[in-house]
Length: 419
Image 1 (cartoon, rainbow, N blue to C red):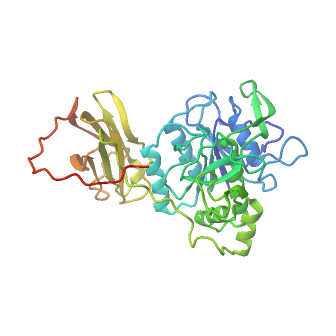
Image 2: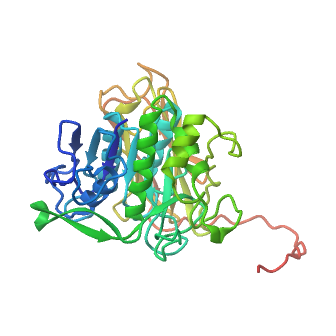
């Protein structure tokens, strides 16, 4: 089973890391190499997952598996990256055949393009698990990609050697499982990637590769299992720390601390007694915006060649991109997709849709269409175009309110005060 690491690169040449033809990589940026890690973060993550058992340094979770490893340099050598760069790395990991993708990164809000990509994989039945760090903010806020509403994504919290949640580990209802994330020693690069060493770091970034490594390890023993079955084994076999009593799941550590032996025993015996009948999925919450925001929705129905379609929605008043879906975001033929975004009231918008083949999305190879709605009212739509089409709607400044028709006053209902 192949695993993929999306991070700052890979310290190829480190004496404690695999360096053979089973290691491949990809860099979506214009500078740097996937096999050079100018930051050290990606190499630390790689060591936790895959450091070889050679009697020096550290030993990775999959050290004996001789596991193919793909590197997606979703973050540059300075430790930062872009959503489009990370999405390109995610897409490349899947195309490379990786079953487990570790993402020890996060920041900003959710991306509609990433959510569409995940939804497309789910609709296609793609067997892949994205294992992501829950975040180091110490609060209950959501961090992405860990908190995307997808059965293909697992959010990982951090615990110390006593299975106590780390103070920095974010906690919320998206956390699925926990792993060691305090005082974790692993491989690193120094001198902008030119030298190799070891370092002891902490963070949910360190916890995530423990879980991803276990996922790859148990999947390599049972390669015909589905992503849902691997996830179920990980969650159902996790060990809940004693301080939480008999609860099945909580916001601190999810189903508990990952346990490789328990998970493998469960798959070996095919005994899931006491587990949910199916792998748990996180139903998306109803989409809503605050009272002073509008809901913008982009609906796309793909044609026979969905990967050719791309679009970008821009607020021309502020000259900012509100949402976008690069080519390759859609993967299912003749499928309807929806992206919703909260935007300030009013505004003038430009919607540009492109088709890389140059035949639009209707009607040569399917009956595709697009429709952009604002507060459930259609603003623009179409489908028959060549290489690209741009339409605008709205006006700069807030939309003047429509006077409400007079209605007789009604008594206000009596409701309890919030507690």
